[in-house]
Length: 166
Length: 115
Image (tube, rainbow over all chains, first blue to last red; front, side, top):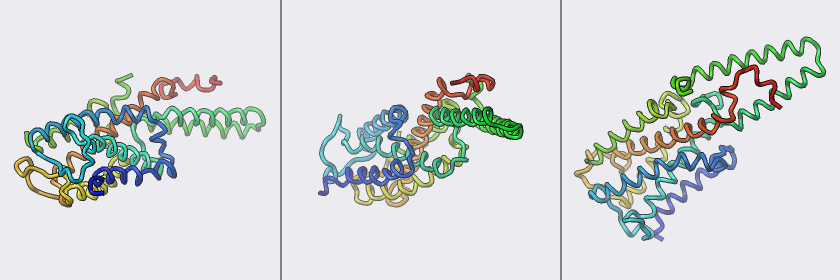
């Protein structure tokens, strides 16, 4: 059982964060392609660093706590570490954002959420067009203005370099 | 290079990536720092277990010797760099995906004409 210590700890991290995806609907595993892109740099750099540190004897592992599988001298647990921990980090960030939607991150460019918003807006407009008194459409245009201002705010509040990148 | 030197370099590199290269500026976002605080707490737990059980052992010459919850203080910098790198890439990848189909750059007048 001792051989499973490190691996079990990593499994515990995955199990512990799973409710974030299932209950809070962070949709991190669901956006797996974006997740792979996000995890790859940390995995490559982490493994390179780890191999360097092992070769320089900066740290070492007690084999009694490892399953015994290794890739190029790197225990499999260490390679998995650079997948599991960054994955937990992304889940945590998305969970915080679910709980605090008003806290902006970057340009809020989730295409799916944006298209849902677009649909919602379209439906609203259709409603106000078909059945409505003047007051309704006036209210709708106020609402539109408000949203436009909000959008502008969130745009300017985001990274300064956005506009330069075009 | 010692672990200490590498960690200082990694933290600076991660900050440069976030602020200058990918321009995600997560270090200016409350959501990032709250996430990091949660993650740092769990890191002390997981890392403390690994170093407390001596699953991982460190060469005393490679670290400055200050320890937090059994683990070398350098591990905190290592964790910070790894988390910032990953989250910056995650946010940036989301922006790029959105760039093609998102209405972010669309002129306002075109919105209503969409099916």
